[in-house]
Length: 289
Image (cartoon, rainbow, N blue to C red; front, side, top):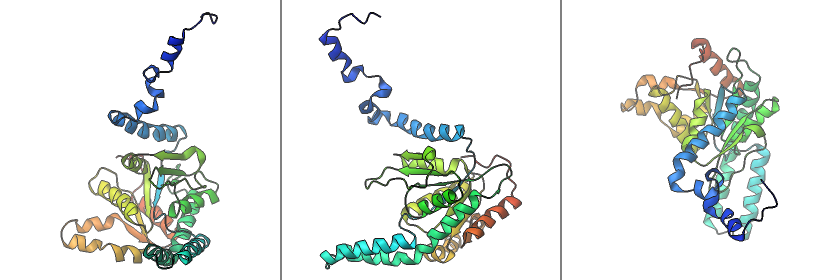
């Protein structure tokens, strides 16, 4: 092509028009409601292809509250809220917030448990020839703790961040090559489950409950092969959810109560996973979803 050929102003203007953009480079076009199926597929494919290329086939998923910090972070947060409250001491929202963050002191231990577990499982050979890669929601709190534990062990770990109205950035312990960001909760939850060989659930709120019951339902209905599901902190879980009462009313079977177990420490969680696979040897087909 002769570079000396003069291009008209009209042609240059047309090249800058929205219609002239290639479809896959046009963010406004890709953001249209009609393109939602394409965006869903892209969110499914990007992490799937990346993890497959890196040979990640087996993961251990850790769920839990973003509000549970280590002791130093908790005390810092309490100081910050108190400082704000001093400027507006009658503000009921701030008073409730201080009460909430103060009560969370008793949950600091779960941060330590999640961190310890992340470290231990990253060094363990639970499945023959396969390392279990820690995967979390990639945010703060329990998620940070589990990723941090893997980082302590010198292992890579995965973070599946979600775009929220109040922006939540990834915690600094997620491996950069495995730091993904999602718009759709549904696709994010699929990625939690697809490669999962074990699920660890620390105390949490609506989000944690949603994620936990998603997996319990998939296993109960046979959409996901049986895997060890460990709830951390029996006192918390038996206080907030009366699983035996659900069975007593007939809405689940007594056998469904065997789909999960409880643990209190990182070592105990690892043992629960080891015991499960001694009883149910892994044959490579545990990941259907």
